[in-house]
Image (cartoon, rainbow, N blue to C red; front, side, top):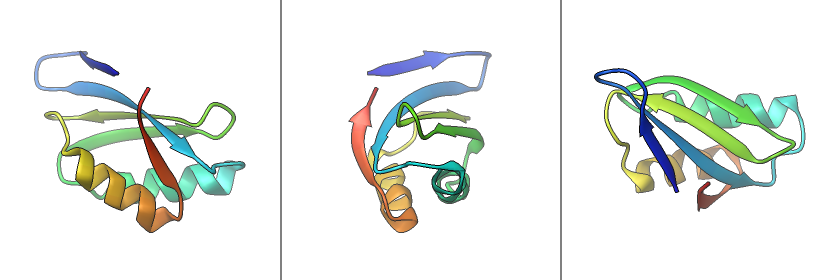
Length: 79
């Protein structure tokens, strides 16, 4: 599980998402997660399945899971 504070008022969390295989997949996951209130940036990498999220505060895991589900993928947990 990776959760670290980058700068005051921001938290970086890395999630593991299964099923991503291309840039379109990355965009779908990033787009859905970026809709969660408090998220300032999202970077998804299909080759590793890692999704790095920077937010104002730690995110509710269920909100992230719902966003990933909405994109059509599965949240495996935190990397």
